[in-house]
Image 1 (cartoon, one colour):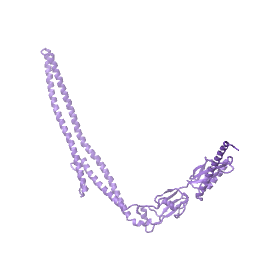
Image 2 (tube, rainbow, N blue to C red):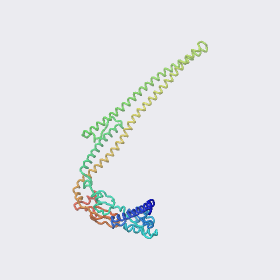
Image 3 (cartoon, rainbow, N blue to C red):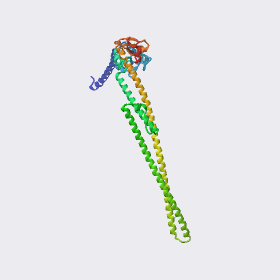
Image 4 (cartoon, helix red, strand yellow):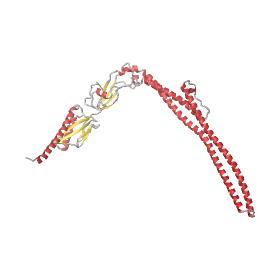
Length: 441
């Protein structure tokens, strides 16, 4: 009888083999149950995602071994095949999951030389999409589920197409909104017309603003207020420019007077310099005759140097005054030119805004015309939305012709469902075409 120390490792090995066996059995059983719950008539098509699980019974160890290198998910290619390691490319299209699992097991048996094929299961993880189009609220592709009916697909696509009204979304509220937008655009056009008149007057340096007849002939209080506002702004800007120019002109006058005074002082200094030079010459002769002392000559030379320095200072001050006068006169010209430049730039911007608003006005006028015509058709189109829907299915990737089905018909993966509605005799087909509704074929 084995001891407790010998029995424990043996017990652990037995439990390990049992666990591995149960895991393998569970994988095989799960695959079988999944295949049983799937549509037994479904045959694999391109874009189908499948999960392949392969296990082998190891008689020598008494346990199942998973082929982890081969297990995994595969997608059926557009050519209808999947590529499995050791097996290579194998045809999956038009085969059931059971047929594909049997084919994979047989090929593995041939490739590996096993006596019996390994147990292989193929489970459908995701079916090919189905497509819903036509008179549904959200035409789209949907993930297929086994047992999906036409009505379920239409419900997932949002149900029957919903519009604001049978006229394609137009309503009395739209009519009111477009009218309000048109009135707003018209008011902005009048405001810009008044601004353009003021800017033209500023650019031309006119004494007053000449407003167009569309403004002067209007009786509304709002338009008259626009004219008053633009006149007030024109007068204020014109007065501000006049004051600036007047201030600069006054400065120029002061500078001219300063230059005249400096010129008079310079002339007076020149006379003093001439007198000092003549006196210095006389003193120099007397110094040579030793009639006067050297200090007398030195004093006169110092006085002459001071007079010449004062003369240079007056010349420099006059040059600075002339420079400031030139800058002041240039500022006057720049100020007037700057006002014209600003007026011209604002005038271009205003002209562009006017053209943009004209385009918007024409657009709103067209929308009002279309909206009015559409509202008159609502009564005729109401009968269209009361008609029962028709369902047409295109199968086999579009190779087969569409055929009509009912709302309880089961769909298959890859189907294209087209939801239509018959057109009653009371509704004009040309009217339906104008709102984007095509007649069912």
